Each structure stands twice: as structure tokens, then as C-alpha cells.
Amino acid sequence: MTELQSPQKTDAPVTSWYARTRFAEFAAARLISERVNLVLVRRVTVTIWAATIIVLLATRTMSFGRSYVLVALALGLAAASIGRRNILSVVRDWLPFGVLLAVYDSTRGIAAFLGMPTQWHLAVDADRWMFHVVPTVWLQEHLKMAEAQWWEVFTSFVYMSYFIVPYAVAGFLWLKDRLQWRRFVLRLITIFFIGLIGYILVPAAPPWAAAKCTPAEVADGSAFPLCITQPVEDAPDGGLLGPVQPRHDGAQPYVERISSRGWDVLHIGPVREVLEVGQKKSNQVAAIPSLHAGVTALLAMFMWGRTRAFGRTMYTGYALVMAFTLVYSAEHYVIDLFLGWGLAALVMVGCHYGERAWTNRKDRRLQADSQAAFSRQDQAVLEGARGDLVEDEEADRVR
Image 1: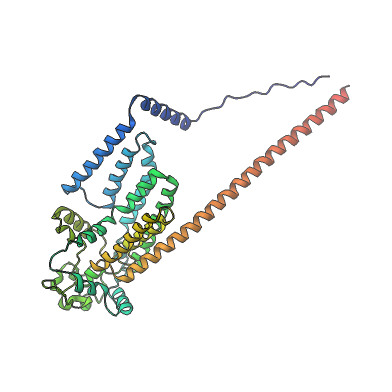
Image 2: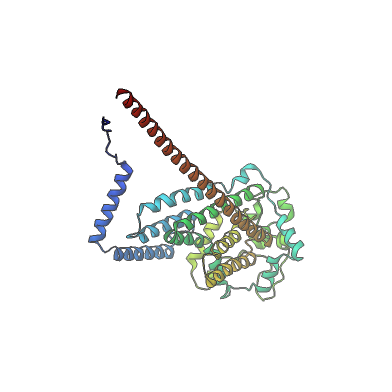
């Protein structure tokens, strides 16, 4: 007796809306690529973008604020993505990154609202203990002249580059390798928010602010004393840093904030004005740790194994020149740099082990899912075999 089995009903696969949308995008991109020279379009668009950025900078329409830089970078990446990848991926990848940075910027001044006392003596005393002098005072005594020198063009450029280079590197990694981009952005966001914790718990004044105030004026630990808005030459005896004894005629006998005066050598006043406006809007007592030092060190550490000898030299040299610039221009103390470098190393190590733990967890989950799938398949085969055995027994009884 032959066994009759009822035919099983099979449903046609249902295509999801996401799959249909992706297929439509692919079809449209293929159609456009066949009819339009996308390489030429990309080159023209990138050229227009670069020319627009130059004009905006020259006319002082664009500042170096983080939001402006990110928007400009996103537009440039969208232009560079023509013919390479979906332009909407710029929004998908960079919008969350921009939102997190906006949250960081909006909370940097929270220490003032929490009433945390500002540390005016901590970093000064630490530098004096390590070097028996305040390095900022010593450098300005020996190097500062009445007018900006040619080499200060490089220090001003290096200082300003902090507001551009980390995001430019992120954009380069995004175009080249999105996996490396995600790893770099994770470390960048992490160092920003850990640094934010430092700003909140230990708000500290930088050297240029300490040079404006006397111990009596900051005895209450105020974050925004009146002296911080006064001209530095009005502070008696060089403020908290003490008097400066310049070695060059005409140099001012007090510590000055000179991170942007190198632009005067090139007679590019708009760049200096834009930078100084941004400095006034930033948190004036966010010195510990130095994220200028921390982020540039993070760049050097992250790119060390991803570049050759020349690239390693450039990134390491960039971090060291940034350190010199920060101390010489009275933006940070040396202790701030050490803390920034230590934070960068901590972030690199922590993210490395965190990523490895996450990868191991995913591998274990995939392995468990695979084993479960095989177990279900084996169970189905076993149940099918049992069903066949029962049917054979029933057939034998009928015979």
C-alpha cells in the first residue's frame, strides 16, 4: 500500500518595505550611474564645497564652533559620497555623533550652576612643585617678544587646528573604513564626556585667567570673578602667576593669552577675530584635564598602528607641538597636559577591552543561536522520523 501525503501549502515570500526601499535606491543609483558621469559630478561638487568654505572663512561668516564645523564636514562628506555610497548614510552615521557633541557642549558650564568652587591655585602649585617655576611664565619670559614672531604662525595654527583636525580625521576614516570610524568616534565621545566629569568636579582656571586675578579676588573660589574680565595689565604683580621678567625689549611684563596672535604675522585679522570670539563663548574654567592635549594624544595613539612611520611621526609631533603651544600661550598648565595624556591612554585601553568583551559576547550569542538552530532542526528531523514510524505501524495493522 502506498502512502498518500497531503501536499503542504507554501506561502510566497513577503518582501519587507525596507527591502523594497533599498532595492529602489539601488535601481535608481544604477540608472543614474549609467547615464551620468558621477565621478565628474563628485569632483565638481567637492570643488564647490571647498570654495564655499574658503569664502565663508575669508568673510568671517563661518566660525570654528563645533556645530558649524560638523555641518560643513557633513556637507563635504555628502559631496565626496556621490557615486560611492548612499548620501543619506551621512545623516544616519553623523547625526547621532553631532547630537552627543551638542549635549557635551550644552553641559560644559554645569559646574557653575552646581556651585562647585573653582580651583585657582591647584594647577599653579602643582607646576611649581614639579618644575620650581611656572613653565608658562618661564616660556613667556624667554620667548615672548613685543610683536608676534614668524614661528608663532605655527603655534596659532596648531592651536586652531584642534577645532578641525579630530573631525577631519573622523571624516577621512568614515570614507575609508566605517569600522575604524566607529572605533575612533567611540573613543572621541568617551574622552569628551570623561573630561566633562573633570570639568564638573574640578573646575579650574587656566594660566591666562590666573594672571588677571590676585589671591584675594579669587579667595571664594568663584568661577567668574570680576577680575577675569579686566585687562591683564591691571592685575598687580602678575596676579597669581607672579611677575614676568621678559628677556626681550618691549615684551609685556605679565603673562598674556597669545594663542591667536600669530595670525597677525600673516595679516589675517578675520581668523584671529573669529577664534577669539569662540574663546569668549567657551567655558573659561575648563582646564582640568586639557582636552586639547588629550584629543591630540588620542589621535596619535589611535593612528599609531594604522599608519606608517611618517604618519606616526606626524601625529606624535602634532601632539607635542600642541603641548608646547598650550603652555607657551597660557592656555594650560603642564599638569593639565599630563592629565589629558593620561585620560587618552585610559580611554584607549578601556575601549580596547570593552570592544573585545563586546565581540566575545556577540560570538557567544551567535554560537548559542547556531546551536539552538541545529537543535531545533535535529528535533524536527527526530519528530518526522517518529511520525513516519507511527504511520508505518498503522499501515501494518491495516494490512
